[in-house]
Length: 116
Length: 112
Image (cartoon, rainbow over all chains, first blue to last red; front, top):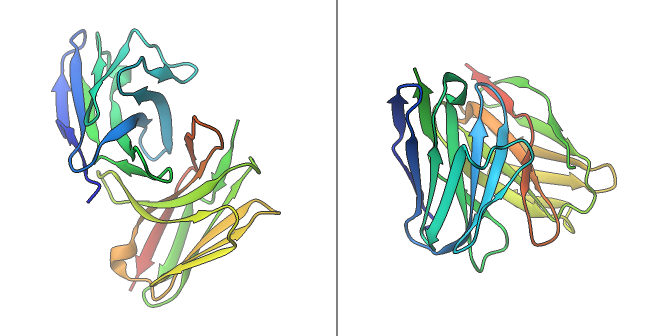
């Protein structure tokens, strides 16, 4: 149980285009989902916290207009990287918290974004 | 904010025990986690410990928590080559935000 999926697993796009990444909790409801960014050989940096039905809370330094987050249902959150640039290339990982859980987050497999 | 530190690299021989250490700064952290990340993959939760515990054992894994020193360790007994990965500790803050702050990750290399 507690499986989180991400789609796509890899995406390559041209500079200036927008890319949408989906995060789904497959067998549980998640009122809260988190989006992280991981640079090569680095730790995970929290980008934003997404609560179902409300606006996402972004961490300091993360541009909300560039990284659009939508948490439309208890099982789906999306991250859209708008007008992508090469410096946005990274590994993006989402996690989901079981709504009635003790705080454990279950992580998706990650999405490798490469912007040319 | 919370700061979580780990050593970057650990090399052990197959069959030996591995000990990965982690320090954190926020004494109000409620839960502390250990995650494993294999190359190109997401994070796999290995184990976690509540802040009012000082030890937790789960098969080959033993977590020790010294809350006074804000020090957490993960011991892997009988380390296998399949244990080679990056190990992250993470501290969960108190309050409704309950965000995780991750350490820098420790790369464990298991040699024959």
